[in-house]
Picture (cartoon, rainbow, N blue to C red):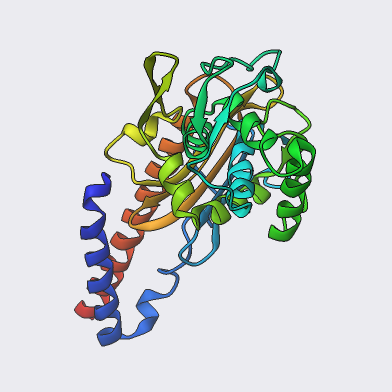
Length: 302
């Protein structure tokens, strides 16, 4: 079912509830149970999964939600929170220096040494395009430098109640940055409270000047450009030790839903898993409405 039909489904549910009031609530018993509470779940391939309906804080589906593992660039959501907590001017220019270079797999960057960008541009590139040098420069330019920044990241995690998380660098290139799906759902909620993070993480593309050339960066999450999805905050991540990861808050049947997918194998698995979760939730919703309608019809005919 397309999200375009979700308003119709909400109307159907509303009509059903009105009918319940007139024929008695017994026919509606069990109709309001949260999706995903049955024995079967979505056919997802990610190693650790957590799906939460934020409208009532119910867990829709969980698999290894407390498994602690590397989280790669999902780290950058915490980086963004610490940058914004520091209240440093987003318009301030920061230069990319040799200290921002990282080595090893996944350390690629399109920001040449000597590039000067505003803190706001660096933050947007870190969130939407997972730019590693941008994230490192944000940490390096924090009062007290990168060590102070990492301490602030871990302090923020503790303040949020993320007891299964540890951070050692602002980019996520270190496999020592670890967390669990449950903790990352908490991080997504905190990030979603920031209008800046919501905007920057869901930007489809952004252009910045590097030397004499305007360079376009695109969002690493292909679902952001898919008009059938409404995504309010998101972040992707990849390291060989972490697999491919995706966290986001989206709307499914007009309900805010958090999806955390960790250690997906294959380039497209995490996106395919998100689609499967949405299809499964929409299908359960449709069956729930149909069952309630049948129960009401049977009650009215008696």
